[in-house]
Image (cartoon, rainbow, N blue to C red; front, side, top):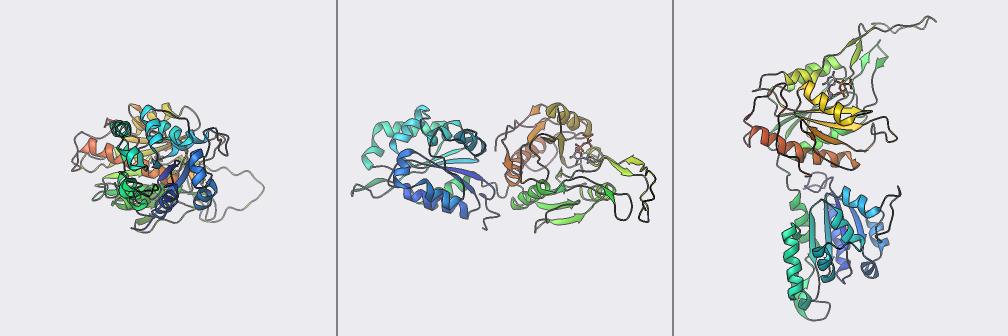
Length: 431
Ligand code: CTP
């Protein structure tokens, strides 16, 4: 599978390397994960850095390496906490007997154990040590504890050890560890059989043949959502407004650059679709009458009368239950994000709404990253940090797929009546 399409595409993996001679294999592990499309950050303990230097990993990943628990990142944030929050998975490889013990009792004295301790993402642990240490009852008890915590263990292998002896304790091969990490995200086919419609970009409401009222939407978020749905097996239609990015291959594209055109396209594509994600920034108003000829400057004031555009997603919400798709809207708010987003979700009759704050120091419009919160009718469902848009798309689909299935059942049959009544689904999970 190509790196752009596999389960690790767009995932952010933190590899924590601890002090074992097997630390050199972590270099290969990082490469394997990157080859499969993951963005990899590396944290090293002090003793790991004695085996392989931070520079090796920084050169490979082109990203800063965290080697001290007191390190700050470029934004002066505590690096290990930032990484712990942003990670989709943490992989401790190689994990020494000492690190297994630290993890089992919740110690966080190194950057690696601090990340594993602070992260809510799944943790994969690949031990490497002498056979005697591995079979020691204390180590085995620690391993059992970690399993109880839900950590995923990649068993060490039998082979020649650094001591010159042969026995169990060799770090699993980098490919085997990468396979285990990949299996965490094997939701590759979880949208198989579903028809998904995504709108993206902004609309442009013509004033005359050359001028329009528009907005700065780039279409990056909607495009990432369409792409991620395609990679999970959905049949995807992208309704593209004005965008600064190309639509992804492998999805059907319908161009619709005005609110009226977008309404028509959505009304044609949405009935019978399983899921509609309205990521487009639809202009709320359009000039009442677009001039057929270019308006000339004559020194006088120009009045452009604006009329409201139809609320497209609210119209879809009114569709009869059997053809109404599961509905996800977006809300960009400059204040009171939660109240405004949930208000829109209720008023428009949506199932989920993705909110983000605009107008602050960070400008998400056109950026490759954003910080979003997903809301259901019961409140906030996520607490995600700033993430690349493709990673947001993956997390969104994890959540949407779960909610869609709990609302409609595994076969897509509607369990509840849709319409203006928002549904309650299962609790949102982090992935
Ligand atoms: N939307 C829509 N049709 C419109 C306007 C918005 O379908 N005419 C959709 C957007 O694609 C988005 C959601 O509704 O998914 C919320 O958009 P937003 O512009 O924030 O909502 P508005 O109702 O226009 O609220 P506001 O007054 O804050 O602009």
